[in-house]
Image (cartoon, rainbow, N blue to C red):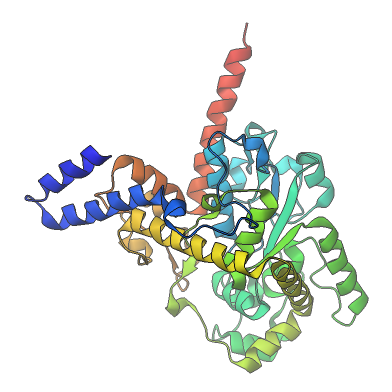
Amino acid sequence: MYRLLFKVLVMGRENLKKTLLLTVIIVCVLLLDRTYRMLEPLPPSCPTLQSQPGSPLRNKHTNIVFLKTHKTSGTTIQNILFRFADHHNLTVALPKQNYVNLFGYPRSFSNQFVHPHTLPANIICNVLRFNKTELQRLMPRDAIYVTIMREPGAMFESSFSFFNLLCESFSQVPDGSIKTFLEEPQRYYKPDEPNSMFAHNLMTFDLGGDHNHPATDVAYAHAFVAEMEQIYSLVMISEYFDESLILLRHLLSWDLDDILYLELNMRTASSKQSLTLGLNEKIRAWNSLDAHLYDHFNTSLWRKLNALDPLCLEKELELFRRAREKLMMTCFGVQKPRLLSPEEIKNADLRPWQPNKKTVIKGYDLPKELPESTRKYCLKFTMPEIQYTNRLLHLESLRHQQRNSNTLP
């Protein structure tokens, strides 16, 4: 690595701009490995940041069910899990190819939706509608269940934008305005259409509940929350993403670098509609089951965070955010890389799927000057969901073929 750095500096006479960028990137690669030694260590009573060299993988939890709810930053969590599985040669349960990246959604999850080459599985994190019985049949008994929620107003606005053409309840709104829909939601809402869940209590639906259950039945809302409490060891909250990841790291006994991330599946500002306080209140009233879920588990998250040593949490968050800055410097040469529109992304493997013409999903492109090893490392952080799903399915199919060839006489 040091020889490469010297070589690059010599080449700088030919192209100073490229040389300076590459130098910064290489230095950051060197610094990334030393992040935890350079920064002030945590107090001895705090959870360790890194496994000791040579420590066995069995100390980390590797059997995980992540219920990926819609429009809640779940794609970023999924990427963390994909990379962890990729790095440790774990098996991720993936959908059959005709389902692309979804397990038969919006149908209730069935093991029949799982590609046979991805069994037995350690991790499942693609979109599905929760079915406890089927998931328990599929996953190891010691699997840890995790999900994520988002403030209902922000989530509903995102859903309205993202699924505008797919959901008839949204697409028939004359001016395409969320305000118009919320003035008379019952006028536009079609409960019997296949994609009605996107327009009403979407989190409840994803978690396996009845999204059309009457809001007046408070007992149902309380019972559903109690059921989720029994199933999920951690419910993350999108608005407190980093804090949620710290709790996830502790729960899974992972290292700090296992939870590093880049934000994925982000919309352009022009794709968003602003919400007044009044509109947000209307969204909560219309999605009362989701609001009840969010309020309960937001409180639950902070109960868990407040149970930690405040000094440990503060220091760990500081170290984590510095490590993320170094990751971005390593991959892009800047601490805050610019998210790009699809037409700006030259590498087709990094272009995210676009839901409609009105909603633009941004992504990343990597600098050409990156060393090959760094490019491979950074590519996994920036790869959109569909491309990463296809990559993992390809790898699992190759492993399946190899296992079969080894069993032949």
